[in-house]
Length: 355
Image (cartoon, rainbow, N blue to C red):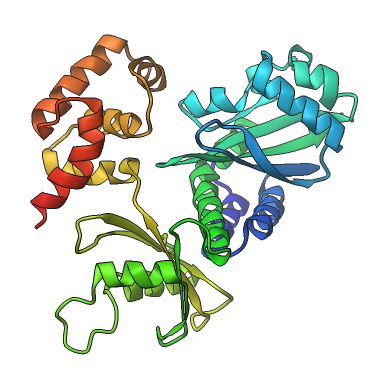
């Protein structure tokens, strides 16, 4: 059941996603917001390397000391336990409570016996923060001993916000990278009239590659002010993510994200440019080639690099069913292999079809 508190918290998280916060600021703000809707004694948001799912940084509120945290990571990487990050990443839902996974017997968990109970903690609710380009973080909220276990409704609520939080985390990582001049992430800051007040070299290159089109008086690509207007509309009654995919004049696909740099409709907007990953193009591929829902899901998982066995486990079907879907996808798209599907279907065949 969705409560009024859950609805308010979800809207608050949407707004935090679009606030242009750094990763530490975003992590702490999300933790504070969640604890109002899902009462708990503390929270921990970790950033993960999408390639290995190893933690890269942590932002903790009333959590474990450093030594215990290192042991928890060791259990996560090397030993058997319940609701591990890799398990949640393969599960149908991204969140789960330890009490549900252990059928109410928390002592079945190694980390509970060795680390959490001695520190005075009881139930925990974990979620992986995954988007179309991989798992970017992990979230835990936890309760102290003698407090009630997390309810199914609380687990469901956190599960429903995991994708939003992942988007905010990804935005924060991109924004931090752009501010530091790393990678090829473009950063453009627009004033209230959509005039450019700041841009980095990568943004200038992306703007040139996008082009302003043939509109008389056009100063920049249409996608930029469109995303900026959507970012400012986040303060409205029905917030919608300020994000769009655009094709450059060279045929490359670009993800354009907008985030407010303050409060109110006249606040500056940060526009971030990031080369679109293959998995982000899967929804477009489905429409272009008439893939079924199941075929589209298989395509998304192929683009994320999953094996046939992993795809079968994620979709709860047999490996033979996955192979049948792949044969149909190849036939409809003209691709001859997985690599051909990712490298050619997304960036050559689909882009060419829009020329």
